[in-house]
Length: 248
Ligand SMILES: [Zn+2]
Image 1 (cartoon, rainbow, N blue to C red):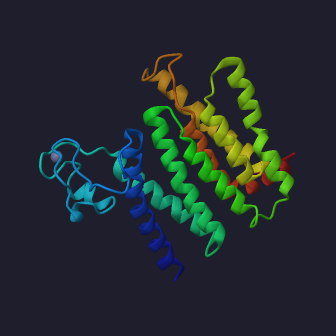
Image 2: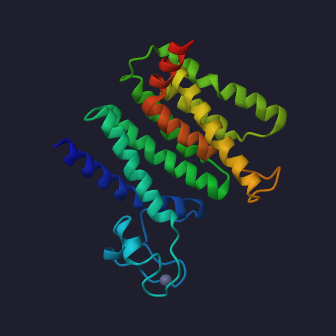
Image 3: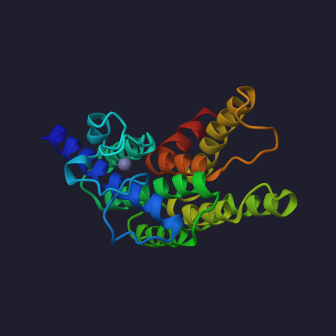
């Protein structure tokens, strides 16, 4: 039965993922998310329902538009796959609880934030507000003291603010993101989120420099790495922190 639920949650995730693709594509263009059917950006032809099956359609179509053979970005099935896995890991840990609901909403917000940040170098305030709302609801569910959550709001956001003030190297969107996630996660998991982001972000930055895909001093959005960190910290942050402290 557990396997059955897990598969169901994964499939549900991929379906929500295909909706996230619409948001990620249309929001920066100020297009309506609700109205207007999906169409090929090249030939404008409306995409048929049977070609909108998450992940699977991409492979049936061999990554090309059915009408004009225009290539479809690998991003679309990847976002669907990420959302599916994202939902699955949350459910696997928190099962049938309200925390699972918060987790899957957080997963969707983080995927939108990360992808739109990659495209536009911007994090929209509406996403901060959504996480703030989740964090507020979570205060009624959390097992941590309130003070942990309050310290969480400032533990990374204040140092970020100082770095931004001194060097301009961190965007306002990142500061606000760590402010609201701090309230959600508490300070221990927020620190874990930050360290995951630095490790993965640093590795990617070094790879891009060595492989000469980025120039030294060119900009790389930090938001997506924070999103990865926040997601895994939501799941395992306090476990990782307690394990780390037990080593000292
Ligand atoms: Zn087309």
